Image 1: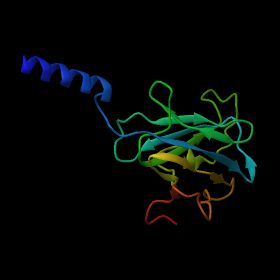
Image 2: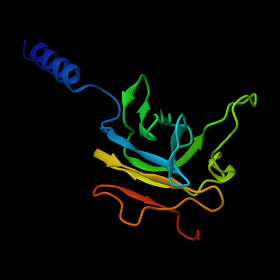
Image 3: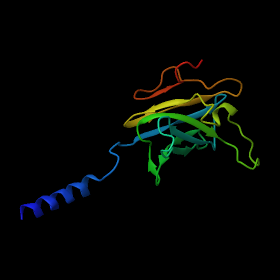
Image 4: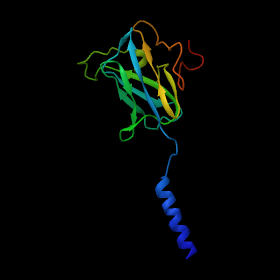
Length: 152
């Protein structure tokens, strides 16, 4: 009888706590600007640096350049970790011109890096057409947005 009770208790504990990854997602949002103006209708992708097989977090910018990330089955946010960031505004068939500088279109060339933590994360991304992306001088509390070590 005691064994049945223990198995039943274990079942309910597993059912209520869930299985799998215990990393709670961090809510990720911010604003993207290009040459001082909101970058509208951009597609933004955050990919974990340490696990290329993991699902990326993605979002899109609105008319104010604001975005919020989603991952796996429209869950809000991103799993905590260090991410490379890519952006795109064009389409693959060339009907819409690409406005994002080429450097930020690929994970192999981007130098935009974010450290997502549990809780609220705000990453404002400032791009310019003629130079590298700019890192905000004072990122909001609870966020890190920086270039990888060794990059100028």
